Every structure is written in C-alpha cells, then in structure tokens.
Image (cartoon, rainbow, N blue to C red; front, side, top):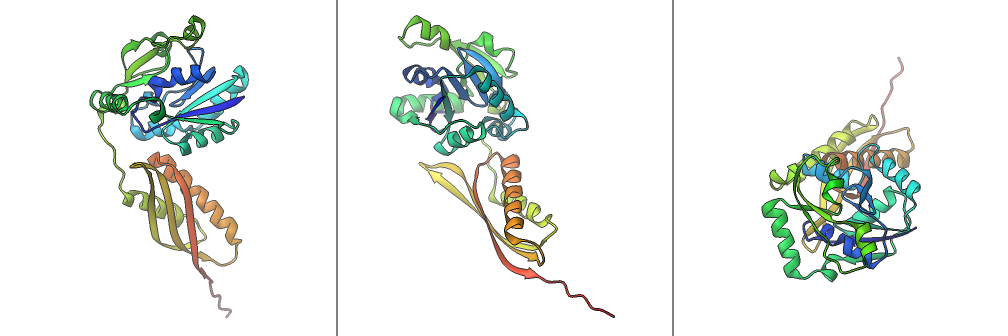
Amino acid sequence: MDVIALVGPSGTGKSHRALQVAQENNADAIIDDGILIKDGHIIAGESAKTEKSKIMAVRRAIFVLPGHAEQVREAIQRIQPHRILIIGTSENMVHKIAKTLRLPSIQLIVRIEDIASKAEMALAQFHRLKEGKHIIPVPTIELKPHFSGYLIDPLQSLFKKSRVRRRKLGEKSIVRPVFSYYGKLIIDDRVIRAIVEKIVKTREFVKNVKRVTVQHLFQDDEDRGLKISCEVVLSYGSHIPTLVEQTQAKVREAVEYTTGMIVHSININVRALYVETQFNR
C-alpha cells in the first residue's frame, strides 16, 4: 500500500482538486476531513464537516476522537487500497494522520500551490469564508445519510479522463457545515497556559508549576501548532524521567483535546525537588 498527500492552507481548494490528484497519481482511496472514501463511496469514518464547532471539526479531521481512528484502520485493512491520498492543511498534519492510522510513510506530497493558481485559491477562499461553502469529494446521494449540515448542490467532475476512472471517482458535493456560521475562532494563549497549569498541578508529585510559555510555529502565516514549556518542583522519591514523560503525555492530550491544536513538543524543566522532613518524637 502506498500513501501520498495533498497539502495546503484551509479553504484553498484541496478537496475540490482531490479527485484530480487521485486520478493523476492512481490513488484508489482518499482520506479527507475524517472520512475514508473509495470509488465514490464513504467506507468509514465521520466527516469533520458534520461537527457543530470548529474545534471538534479539527479533532475529527486528525482522528483523535475516541474510536474514530480504530474504525478507519479496520476499514483500510478490509478494503486493501492500492494507494491512499491523504488531504491536510500541512505536512505535519498529513504525517500525523498517517501515523495515527498506522499507514506506511508518505511517499509523495503534492502542494496546492503547485496545481492551482493564486486566483483559483483566492476564489476558493472567498467561497469558504464569505459563503461557508465546503467541498466533499463524494456524490450528493452518497453523502446524504452521513451529513447533517446543509447540502447546497452537487458539483460534477470536469476531468477529461477515461469514463471508467471518472465513474469510479464520482462527483463532488458542496455543503455548508453548521460551524461555518460561527465566524472565526481565536483561542488566547492564556487559555492554553491555564490548561497546562491545571493538568500539571493535578499530578500528585508536582509541588509547584510556574513560567508556562506557549510558542506558535508559523509557516507562511499559518499556525502549524504549538511548543509548550514550563518549570516544575517535584516531590522527592520517584523516577523523574517517568514522571515527566507521563506529565507530557497528559498535557498533550488535554491541550489537543480541548483546543484542537497540534502540540509539537512539551518541555518540562525540573527546577527543584521537594523533600518532606519527618520529626521523630
């Protein structure tokens, strides 16, 4: 099984061009926004566009919701696609999806700016931001049982390939998810710091936590995720590397679950050990 990817900023027309990229690279399955598609049918998963909030949509798209990844992994094993196309907003995202679904390493990454002009990407962003229109690369009749938002209209594929390939890949549907009406969502760094402090302080071996910092990793003005760091004072008597590793895992899980943001690293600096003094009378 081979794996390729199509990446580009949100709203630049990736899902619109997914069928074209799949055709040109002989991919017979697509993973887009939380669903596994093969031959124009939704095989497994749930579309991120069915979620009622942007945060939940992001979590759905990267397969971190309980049971979601397991369902899609089982379906992939069952249908045994020859080549899978993963669609995502960044290289980090598609690599993370491949790892979560236990797929082979990505062999080829196609970037949206290599197959679409600036004018085409700008038009796609206009429809996304101003009209709330999203593309799902499956026929409307296939999508209806799976989608609870607003179905706008189907969009026929215009690719001049063989009839067999076009019939297999089907057509695309235009939808308007509920969350597209909510406007832009901004999560202040103070919220992220509060989550980190809460999780770290609840660890029984942590006596104090301070200097929590949040760094955003940007690429081409797009926020690609977070680097988090903090300082702690631990109780003496336990294996420090184990405690730190467990705390890092808890913080990552909490931040990604709550905010939908990707956490690249969590650095915990142990500044001191707290030793309890016992007096014998």
